[in-house]
Length: 427
Image (cartoon, rainbow, N blue to C red; front, top):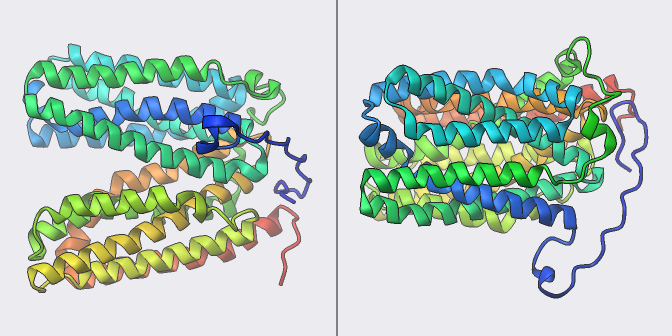
């Protein structure tokens, strides 16, 4: 039985009606299906925009690489800063209300890029959009905690992540047309389509049925100090999860740089790594949530994920100095291990983010948990591109040791959290 941190049994979940007809191919829970449709629309727009963003900012807005880098760094800092207050706002004023507002701000901000003509305006707008994006991410997870039964939150979250990957892939494929046309109008159309997807998402979120306490935000721990920031075991778990989230910088930045600069593998292998990761995540993410129903089990899943990420780092480092074909095989094998570590560490992290939170303060807890991930996403690219790539095999080995240690440290941190909450901890 799932319990809150203070040991209060959670109410039994409502029965999920069996799917019929075409719905057999979809998730059996109607709420998850509803959220999946919403996620798909938004992520197609995000994939479309992401694929053309750098070219839009540099070739249409006329920014230099240095200006773009500084602007995005400033935006990342704003995103980190926004997660915690956004979560608290959800507890105070209602999770759905705050989420709709933040997604609407993303829609307006993304569309406003079409009106930007100066660098200062770009930086200011990028900061607003990033703050709304990271804030909405935290509040979105709090919404999942409110509308999904406790014993199906993690599996539902995993299904939505699969839908996210599918939507991003579809959007990226559509972006190929804009990249081929290569005009200001084509890039601007892609950006405005993303803005439209946010507007549609905001309208759909407004119609998601939520419990009365989540609508009003009344009777929740929204006053006084943030309970998540007073929960030291939870902060430790958040920090360890943030370390494991450095894996995304490895895949998105480290692996491409390593392939191009330090191995003989053909450059097309860069695209192959994305395909391998995406296919494995789509195929395995939901399955990886099995066995995460209790915090202790979820902690062990994180440990296995950390060890797989450690192995992935070592394998990637071994690609240096090999002939082209062998280097390509080794890199793809390393990325396959990374994908296995990713699905496990993410499944365990989601479970702990939900299970270690107080049921009447999910906004506060998800805000803090999301802030940890945001820090990793902001610092990860610089860390991986300088320290890891710069030190070669030694750098990859050090990174692997960090991943392994972080994964294995989750279990004792979770035991501490459960003891703090008064829950019996098996020997």
